[in-house]
Length: 116
Image (cartoon, rainbow, N blue to C red):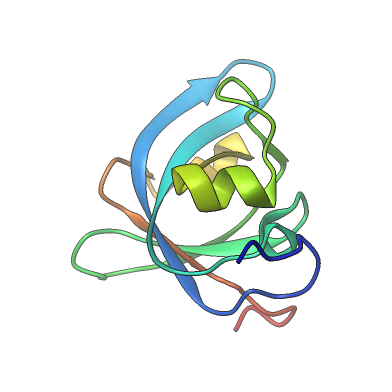
């Protein structure tokens, strides 16, 4: 039943369950899986996610800089078991036009190379 961590897992949607600044690293988003079966290959550093606020009035594409490891090593098996993942994004990506990414936003993917 467990899928290997390589390859694409298909469309997915996470809900942001926590959002906080991490000094000298960026901005941490704790993501809780809502739907889909993401692959860690789609969530590795350098890949992109689409962040959408409640109501869907805007969206922004952000790059994953790193993973948070406070809750454990991010593996495919851990993601499938806990349905949570901590990611780090750039601080300037977390605050655009004075609107920060907050609890309740959604992160979707995978996002293609052309932003689609």
